[in-house]
Image 1: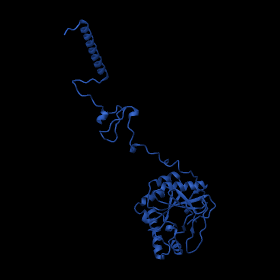
Image 2 (image 1 turned 135 degrees about the vertical axis):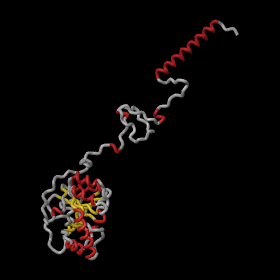
Image 3 (image 1 turned 120 degrees about the horizontal axis):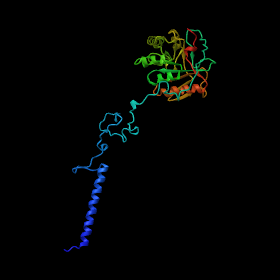
Image 4 (image 1 turned 90 degrees about the horizontal axis):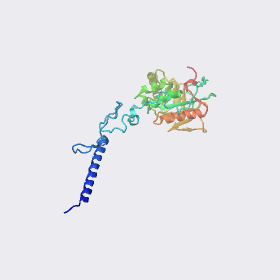
Amino acid sequence: MHVSARARRITAMIGACVALAVVVAACDDKASGRGQSNGAAPAVSASAHGAVTPSTDGANPDDSGDPGSPQPSGAGSSAGKPTPSKSSTSAPPPGNTYAGRLPKFGQPPVPHRINLPEGASDPYYARIPTDQPVAFLTIDDGWIKRPEALELLRESGVKVTLFLTINAIKDNPGYFKQLRDAGADIEAHTLTHPNLKGKSYDFQKREICGSADQLGTLYGKRPTLFRPPFGDKDATTLKVAHDCGLRAGFFWKETVDKGIVRYQEGHAIQKGDIILMHFRDRFVDDFIAALQAISAAGLTPALLADYMPAA
């Protein structure tokens, strides 16, 4: 077939353009790093493989130790550094853990000690007869030993009275030594936490005297105060406490549980009130709620033992 000179020139021009386009594309690929040699398959990015690119600042890019964890983008820059694990974050400075929740108290006043009635039985108080602006936070039993309790006592600086049950504390008596050293006073609450009311003299004596004796051995000071379990007592209970060398028994005017303060009278703590909480799971909430209620009443926490006559 005859091809005209015009057609041959057009064909030649198209071929030249195609060749020029190939050369330009090849140069462009080489400049951008996309070019491959010898027909090799295109490289897959490191993150797609799970490979970790070493950080340029020498930091370990993956604290988990898993070599398959991808390096965050921007390795070597501050934006690309991995977030520290929970164990590597700095703990709050001592003494500031509960700073935003704990009320501030000044020192309690110099206590005006009360007079105890004489007789063969101990007196029994739910409120200390005092005109001083104080209240008494008491904490019972000791079954659940939350580690936060020590920090709360240290940060708050308040004085509390612990009525401890031997069965509850015997698995870790050292826990309560720390609380004692932080300002808590340790007093008696029986051996096994039974209901004493209606029990024989010998039964009650074993529970009450035995508790005081063991606490004295454990903590270097024999208790002088007593709380019967559940607040239940009879005339025998108070006589036994007296015969065991204890000077007074205690009930309460307010209770605290799950962060809620419950009142027997009115809606505020009164001077001399005794407040009851326990060593429970919500210890932090209960402790703070009790102190907030004391503060709201314009009172300061004090120790029951400081208001008893000097021995």
